[in-house]
Image 1 (cartoon, rainbow, N blue to C red):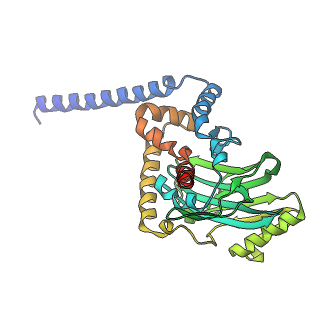
Image 2 (image 1 turned 60 degrees about the horizontal axis):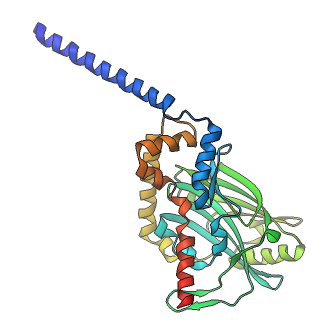
Image 3 (image 1 turned 120 degrees about the horizontal axis):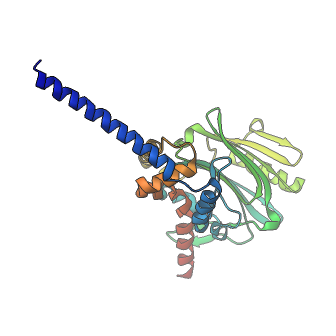
Length: 312
């Protein structure tokens, strides 16, 4: 090989090494200087940003959750909301449990699945003493309101991916939730172990009857005093039609791509606060997509649709 060819090859190798060194140095600089704020203030900033959405972030356990007095509480709940979930990239299983207690109709509903770029689960508690709504072409059925502070129930929620525990949370609440950002899990491989403690035996029995009416057998329910535990795996109740369509498969594929991109971009960071701040700099569009689940569009749009129909 001619001397000049060897010289060119050596220069080329040197330039590659120089480029790699510069790239690694730049990445180290970004890692050390892009996110200088202490964790406490970064957490405060993120939760302040999330406040209008109704959600907050728990850095100790690395999950997002709904605040007690979030705006969603005023929207109540009905079947229409579940029907519209797919419109917001939510592919979720829903399990409404209906029962009568204290002169009112009650709804305790479970959800689990893929909420955009988060995997998660929910337990909601609602009641109504009103007649069903009959809005031609829009909705026909009961509309429930979130329970009052005096009617909050102790709930424990454990979310599993097959046999692996992903997250657990407990609290006295009307809507206990947990969402894991960047985690991709189709509803079919998720399960939720849910425990609810009731104030008296009458309400406990009514809920047990509701579970059995939904299709749960005695072997699928555990009761200890006033606490009922149920494992939510495959839904017993009829799911929204779109949940069984090819649209759900497309949305899951779409969400999976976003989750992979999120993990790729933020792979140098170990905590969600750092991941989000780095993502906001590198890919603002994906950053907003990542927090899209906080929009709870199925609640807001469904509620507004109902209110407009009632006014007309």
